[in-house]
Image (cartoon, rainbow, N blue to C red; front, side, top):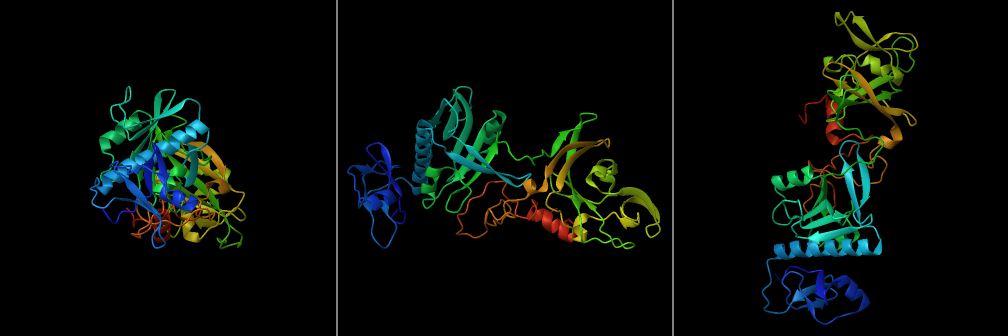
Length: 393
């Protein structure tokens, strides 16, 4: 117990922070441990950061249990204060589809209230913290210390249409929860799942209804890559179609049978595709043609030629069902699809779950924050594009 530096305590029914008291040179009487309610005292020396400690000989609850209960009270207090004052309690989350950071506000709206470890009408499970709007639960906060939220609970919250925030606090990052759930250094790791909606204009669901037959259709991302590919005959630039599936970023060349009929949707992107006989291959296939001299160019992947998507261009999204129907879904300026890493707004974070692989790194990510490549693509996509796929399959 002696190695835990408790940053927060309770005094007169309110939470007090060691750093705040040390800064203001205050030492209120009657301070107690948030976890076990025993008396604690402020320790604000010069060798360690300000913290609270139990009296000699005191036996406290296990640190994991204290951390869990303390984090719940810190979040509940900050969120309740924000609602009462009309201030925001921000929450950020990543969209794993379009690599965008979304900004939300748990304290927004009239009539919001919170409950702590309380059974709610119509809700089977008891969330650590529930956020209600007009009495209806809309979000749950689960603090994870010794065990994660089980699959049944997560599935239930999802089916109930509730957003779920799972947070992994540490004593060092606990104070950051007073400011909300933020994707920044010094904040605890957390994830957002369930009823969270991406606000990016570039967000496209991986599977959408077909515009012709209404059956499920895969969504595809189409970009026109220009420059760096010269026509072998006239030496002018040849625009090339970069085609990838939204759900996993898998790239396709123009003649891949899984994207048969793509020429009908690619015409509006300034790309010339035509079914043409190749003497080298000995058969006909869909290939790029030079728009200047109509020379045969090939069906290759755009990433294979080192292409460049120019500012001002549009990224087009289209869907294809199993019957081969193509439907235009959206067209978004390429600048709105770029990742925050490419724009220099976020640090690089590595790891399969989006977290850093350094053991002492407390930087925060969302569970879907694994998108770290330039141009709004993931590491998996970038490596697959470099080496022809298969490395992550």
